[in-house]
Image (cartoon, rainbow, N blue to C red; front, side, top):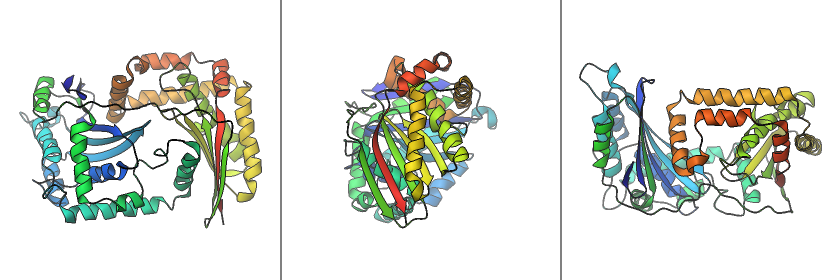
Length: 415
């Protein structure tokens, strides 16, 4: 239901969980100017507010509410940067008779959002600087992960849109440039201008929840968000070799995919990724890691919201030509339909198993609700999704494989 223009409340009453779940979601444009500010906002939201001005007091209040859990989460879809406040709290049936946590939990969320720890239009400096330092340390340590670093470098080669190669968590340099004023002003902008979705899932009084959230001072806004990003294919494959002091060498391959979320070819694409490198039984793992012994870590991942299928492999630097040759062979076999029926069936079973498990994960259910809201009929129910997966044939997979084209090659050569 709509609380204001581009502000939505989603209430899903179910009794299967011991806890109720609230996700307050900000969806805004992903760009290099604001990504660090938004990540810093996420840090501050889970740390303190004006009523509970220290992390200790903040956590003590949550503990007093029978152990309410609050955290923030950051993700992307296409060119959209998503900041979640996730809260879980005990259902009434697990509390002393006559007790309910819904009202107190929503009141605490309101404090987090509308009574932040500020002083004259900026976050309280001491707390902010602590969180900024913590974030920069995390980002600096992340840069030492060769797979993380090389994947970001692959994205720089692959995407023409220069914002995308930035991590959803920003970078230490971007964070360093921000301060308590710029971050707080970004938070106020998020409250005014971001698309907002509020999800409540569990065993609760829907009418009472509606009353509580209707009191939030959220105004109309007009958003224009690009959840599916596609760039044109280039016949020229970009390639870069970088040498770095590292025991490992990492090969990263970026493949262009024209297939968007929810399209008919999306379902064969999911199976293709599973067959190629998404599972331990996949072709990359069995043929290149186990049979040829060329890689200690190999697989593939699909970013369907940005049109990127990427293959990663940790190898000895001398094995790059042979590894590339074998990866190309696996892709060629898929395009020619050289796929065993057993491999197709096994991959379908893995996908269906993951889908069934997601029914028992509140955050996964919330993600389904969000996709249904933004993608409409393209986002299927579980039974519809299962039917689509079941009907995918080997011909569908090979046809989709023929649409996948190598666009970028990045090699981090360890020294």
